[in-house]
Length: 84
Image 1: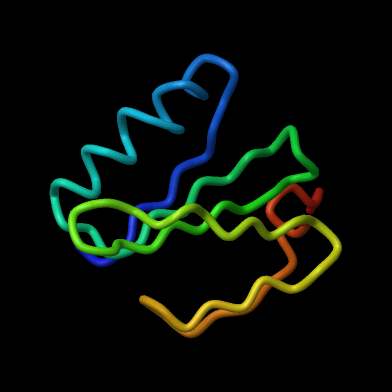
Image 2: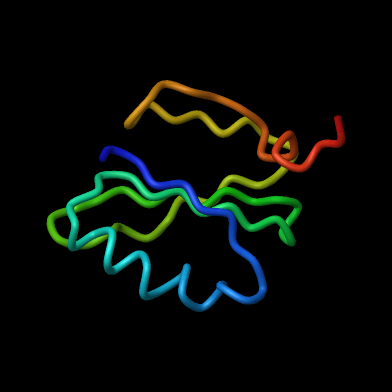
């Protein structure tokens, strides 16, 4: 597995921020993206460095988040909560 993407909720916020990130790092998953809907939304991007993730790069709504690992993609996190 190259990437895990999770959408955080009030009921899982603490687990998402700590326990799950540790478990994914121990499993060797190179990239972990956490979406925080209540932050506009915001996208937190974690990259594996050895056996743990570096501090996340935070992408806020209103700006294009560009990633090259594990896939080349770019999008504004605001589209994640856009009404269709």
